[in-house]
Image (cartoon, rainbow, N blue to C red; front, side, top):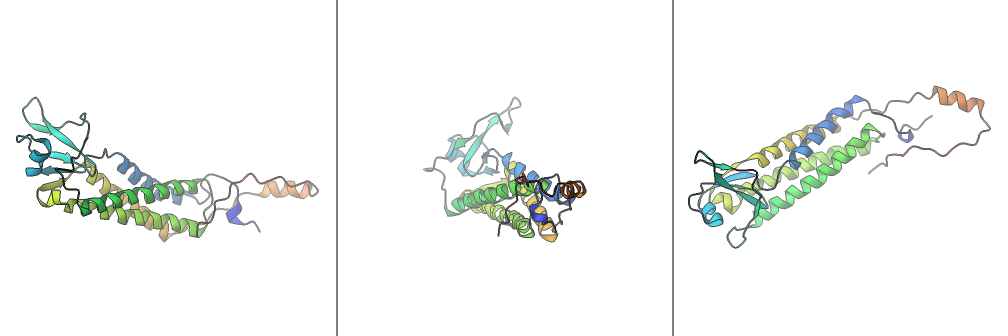
Length: 227
């Protein structure tokens, strides 16, 4: 009997079921990569003047590492010019408290777990996964979701407690990531798509007529069972 976990490389060995969680996980990963580091939220209040020394500026677009100042357009209204470069915080002015540091760590861990899961799940389109390896991918995606949700604790930092914060593009992109990673992880854990048997009729016939032939080295790359 052929061991299904030692079959050679082929396209979609688990069938088309793997396409949906793979695409969803990838969409979430790409959503997080579209953030530029200073577009997580919009902050209004006294902190704006303290950071920019411009009392007329009404708001800032801020992130976990940098911020972007608003600018006046031709209609004399304040808006965010995304051609402007992000600026680093002056820690003598901005209080990078424990909640801030915690949310940064959670965001980083979410990217690590999600990136590993996305990379691994793409291999399911070429190689056969054991049930344990398949479940490992689902656990990574759900863990990344939890870490990303915990990163929203940034909205409880002293900057937002003492001022008014509203979510901007970065926080909305993280919502997309959380939703897609969660659905992808659930799809992975709910069902293990059994690998399809390859058509070995031709190879069996050749082996029967060449019993004395020396077997060649296998050209397949086996997917390790991560347990």
